[in-house]
Amino acid sequence: MGDLWFEVVSDFWPHGKISDAYGVLRSDGTADRAIIIIDKAGVVQFTHVEDIDVRPELGMIIQALEQIHSRRSP
Image (cartoon, rainbow, N blue to C red; front, top):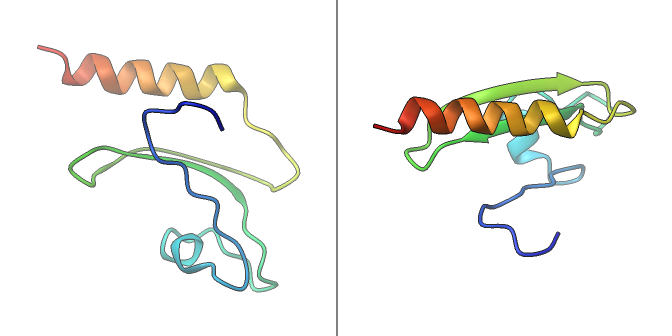
């Protein structure tokens, strides 16, 4: 995915451990499309879940990251 400064996880059957832990793994082994932003302290800061066939708007993700950053800035 290029030179990202953060980790991206793609988790699916037969693994699915992370998807299951966050409640987005379906019984058929597929997962809903979930955007979960976790800060460096391990705290979930943002969650957005869609059907697997729906691609989230990039603008929504950028806005969420900006809001998280502004809350953390002094």
